[in-house]
Image 1 (cartoon, rainbow, N blue to C red):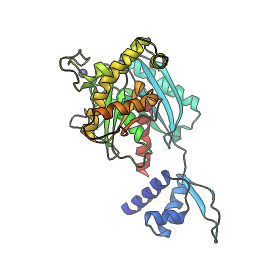
Image 2: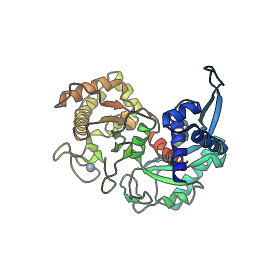
Image 3: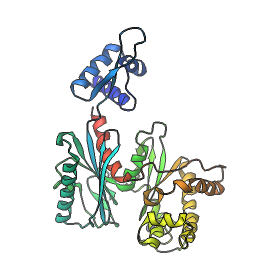
Length: 366
Ligand SMILES: [Zn+2]
């Protein structure tokens, strides 16, 4: 029974990552017998998990059927921040299909969670998707979670200490999974990336966070606090951080440092910077001085690709060559900064990553 399930799962995952294939190719690639693959394909088809998309051109004999997975399930993701709720709909592939962002300040009260439940139900209604095709709702929080991800151990950005997944579940009629916000965003960046196993994700949001992903898995650490890059010290006795310590990365590299000069709009900051405006130019130079230190430290620690994400990171495509040059100058071993990348999800990476938790669970359950 166990072997049977393993074979079925291997076939499904193989199809998930590829263009439509013929049964013969699947058997060959996975080193399984043709009858084993045929039997499993039949079963997966009966469960509506895979579909035939047509016939391949004949190479002499009978035309082979083209088989692929059925992209018919969806997941919802929430990005809960201090003042907003972002909601996304993704498909099984991880593609962002719909998103909204509403101003809805976090309050640790029943009426807040009821309100979030209503926003989710309203959003799903607008999506016109059958309830049975929704895998669940992933909820990303700016908080450190317990090892089982059921409760909140630490939260200062939102006042949700002692909170739990139950607070949301009560008003959301789908399975719910909690995620840490930066871990969710980092997870999204690696989804469907076949060749990258290890990555450090630096989240440059209104607070700085991050995620360490090793062998495609988020490294959690002893207390689920790994990747809290915002509280590494980069300036001894520097300015005071919201955590109470001095000289933390957060004080120098949060997106707020930039967007405070443009009424909170990071898009406007980068627009003015592009036009060569002061004080944006001066702020940016100062910001880069600190950011380069952080990036180089991460490269020295983990020796893997570093991805810049968050509100500020999403705008850094046009500065990536400059950033690579600056970080390479700091590096003791390397002459280029090709390890440095900008995030691929410019929009709602955190909510997408939260939703992907359900997709991953679904794929593993087959
Ligand atoms: Zn701090």
